[in-house]
Each structure stands twice: as structure tokens, then as C-alpha cells.
Length: 317
Image (tube, rainbow, N blue to C red; front, side, top):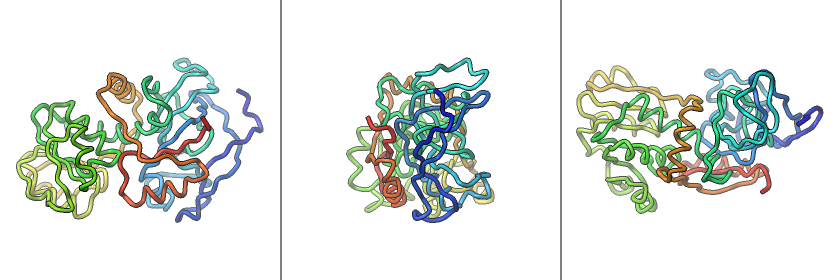
């Protein structure tokens, strides 16, 4: 594909701030360099990190260059490859959580490293495939890589009906753990279908009554994290994706505590695709928006009351 002087639609910000800073613009389609592939984006997914980056909350952590295209979760088709790319070919269907420091996937095309992508699940359509990478990698790396979850563990997963929570419940059950999770009343029956053993309706119950847990997976931070410490047994593990846990408090409770910032990992994505194609992982989509309606999608994401993932349909099917 010759992209010279061709244009694409992309959702960009030229400065950090609120939704008003988000603009759909026509920009040049990038050309893949050495080790890169150009992917035609069919669908992309919305994550809290999108609006946190848009607001500038991560500006000191991730060195972004403005203008910046948002969106770091996608599924699409390779249309061009750069020099020395031998592992991928034009026409292959892939999915990924690409480099957060570079332009993202809320665009008709995205440029990514060949080392960031994996073949998309064969059994899923573009929308559901786009909903997988970031949240499932987050759950995988938190529970398996950091938490070393194992058969018989008692695990509390906060916000079970969120994108990360849904993935985490299923991965924890596959590992043989007993799963406790928090949710609102409307999501209780849904979470039972995922295999959650004990669902705590946070509108009526207090999870802090739990005790002797092997692991807590915190997706919310703040008071929820603080109330989670006493629920762990001595030597237990707390993993947070919302904030860096306090080491002194962890020492006081004689537990291990870690922060997980998800990393791109195509090998893990390949394993995740196998689980999905074997019908061992379910994917839940909350709603689908067009690229032009990205602001509405992000606004919904910011409410924190989403079951599963919000997806952006980029390519008209």
C-alpha cells in the first residue's frame, strides 16, 4: 500500500485537557519504518488510560509528543510492512495494546512495532477482538506474573463487571482460585455466569468483612485499596492498577504489595487468543460508538459504570 500523501481520520489532541480538546482531523497516513507494520484499524477500544492521558495526568510518566492520536487497544489488518519485517505479511488480522508513548488507534490506520502485535482470535469479530488486549493483559500480568495465582487461592477482585474485572475473574477461575468480587446489584447474575464464587453487592454489603484472603486485585484505588489491607492473610499479596501501594502499610500488615502498569506482550496475547478460541474466555461489550462520537464514548467511560468494554467502530463494516 502506497500511503504517500494520503490522508486518514484520527482523533487527536493538540493540548491536554477535557473533552473539548478532542478533535477528529485529517492527517497523513504514516509509512512503516524498519521493524514496523501499518495496520488498517477496524475497531478500537476505550480504556480509562485514554482520558487520563488526554487530561495530562500521565504527562510526567509518558513522554508524549503533541498532537497525539489517542487509543491503545485495537484489532485490524496489516496493509504495509517496513524493512526487515519477516514475521508478518500484508492481509493478516492482528490485535494489540501498542506503545502508550506513540500515536494510538483512534484512527483509520496505526503504525506499530512488529513485536507488539499478535494474531487476533479467529473466533471473534473485529469489535470483540479490539476489546481484549489491554484489559486481559492487565489481568494476566497482575494475577499471573506478579501475583503468581495458584490452585486454591482465595482472591478478591474489585469492580468485577469492569473490563479488567471480567478478564480477571475468568483467568482466576482458570487458575483454580476461589473468586470474590465486588459489583452493583444489576451485575450480580452476569458475574455468576463468569464463574465468580462470591459476589459482594457494594450497595448493600461491605467487602472489608472478608479476611484471610491470599490476594486482592485492586482496580479502584483510594478508600477501596485502604480497606483491602486487613482482608489479606499474613504473606498475602495486593496488586493495584489504580495507584502505587504504600510499602509501609504493606509491612504493617505483613503482606506483599505491587503496582502493575500493563506492558505490551504479543506472546501473552497469543496465549489469550488460544483461550478465547477454546471458549474459555468470554468477552463483554458494553456499547459501540463511531469514531466521530469518541467524545461521547469517553464521557461514558469516565462515569466508571460500564459493563465490559466500550468499542469504537473505525472501519465501516
